[in-house]
Amino acid sequence: MLMELAVWLATSSCQPHSHTADSFTICAEKVEHSYSQTSSSTIGSAPKAKPMRLCSYYLNNSIDSPTEGIITAWVPVGARSCIGDSPPEPQVAAKASVVQSSSELRDSLTSFSNRPFASWTPGEKLEIFEFGQFSVQVNNRTTTGLLLGQTAKIRFTAGSMTWQFSDSTTASGRSVSKSFQTVGAFFALAKVAYRVDYQMLGRDWVLNAATVTLSSNQLEIEVTEPPRRTLLVL
Image (spheres, rainbow, N blue to C red):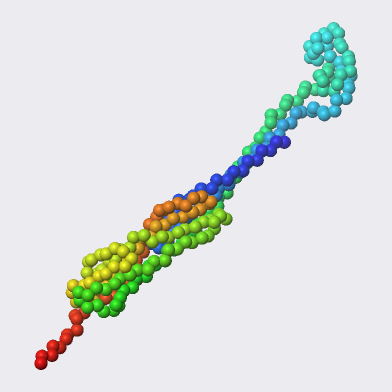
């Protein structure tokens, strides 16, 4: 019997990443293939031992073409056919069987980015034509976990920051100054674009794998007239 066994592993990424508005997911799969082969052969009535036997055969060295003379001699068993022997059994061809199997394992790691936080001063109310200061705080985040038993990391790094105000104006930057030209209620929010990098399966970092844009909390601003001042005339 002959047996061959082969096993190989294939580790690849299964659509390596995906993302939503505030999350990023990396995925990997490991496929294991196994292959085994067995073969056997049988030779009819061929004894392992080699004892001697008394054998008769015709002068022409055959056992089925008679001649006037016959030779009788001691020969090793199985060395040749003798008169009166049954026809030898045919040799059975080797049979082989092949068994193949495979298994697949998938794993994923998901990380969520931190929402930016916006604030402004002086807060609540702002006089018309006066400048308020608007700021946004970001918290870069790195998530570490296991993917197929190996360390994997997902990293969020804040990039561009854009402010949107309800008077249809925009501004860029972590901290901006802004005034309003009319009295009324306004709101503002900041949008931060995060660059996403990841590292998996002992490989180098994959940079700029995706961009995730998150909105901050909404700020409410009440723009008022300056207080009236009484002019005292002497």
